[in-house]
Length: 118
Image 1 (cartoon, rainbow, N blue to C red):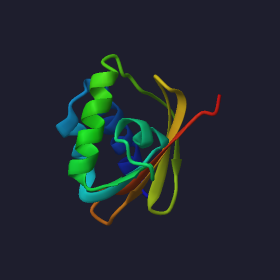
Image 2 (image 1 turned 90 degrees about the vertical axis):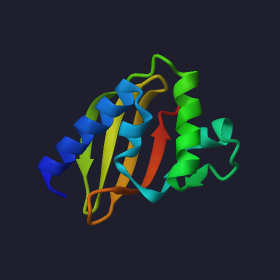
Image 3 (image 1 turned 60 degrees about the vertical axis):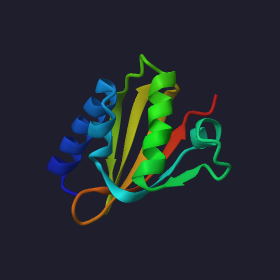
Image 4 (image 1 turned 45 degrees about the vertical axis):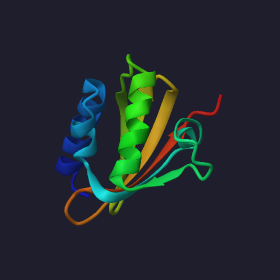
């Protein structure tokens, strides 16, 4: 992963979320990407905590944004892997980290959210 790409992705990702613009948020992801989060169990009522495909995730994120009208993220750290990154950020759930796996076109094919244990 090139640092320039990673920094650009992180900046655009957090700006998209902070704007609450679902189309901007989704622009970072492939249409068949998989999202994993313990919050999916509550909001999407999916017991596995996983959703596949942009339509399923769009519905989930739309509900999440409506439930959190003041949602705001602040990037704390960026960790770079081979074809993945981890963004550590502060949000309405406290300290969180999300792993993003990318394809060769620079789109996210899998993402997994993690939340601070309190």
